[in-house]
Length: 200
Image (cartoon, rainbow, N blue to C red; front, top):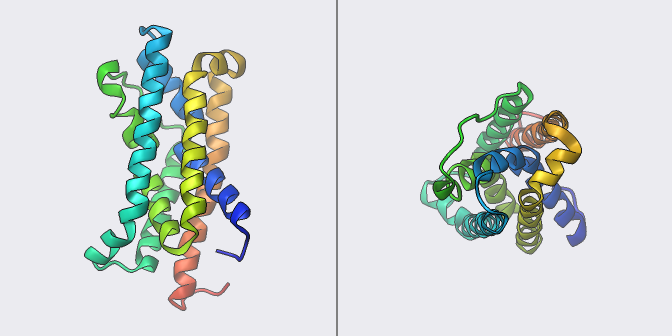
């Protein structure tokens, strides 16, 4: 990562995490899942989902390096594989694929709202890579800020959908997917540069 200040790293981490977690796509699914619940129950579910997201990503941030050492995976190997994962997920979103099943609201807090919708392979990969080679304080702060953004979208899902419409939300999902694809390509390129296969 280029030499930037703490604030610059925070902004970069925050924007990328929001793009990967994709609140634009999560909000309609959340609303479909909880449409029969009372407003206070929706908010409670949104609160719980957000806290679980933060807890899972903090756990990954503090154990990621240990897991890499345990499985004897170098950061470049993981970064290369993670870049492929990010590219794959971005292309999947660009093609317009989406989950159509509506889970039981009692189970939705963990599956699929938290995992794999918000905390999936791409999110976990990004956190592990940049915990290892970036600024952990900036990343942890970005996790909290990104989770708060997701929470805002979940709580205001009905109003956001009425204002923007599902078509606009799908367009925003595809636009952010381009940025996710760019992050994936950057991670792959960085690994190839470190291996001496590509040039900066």
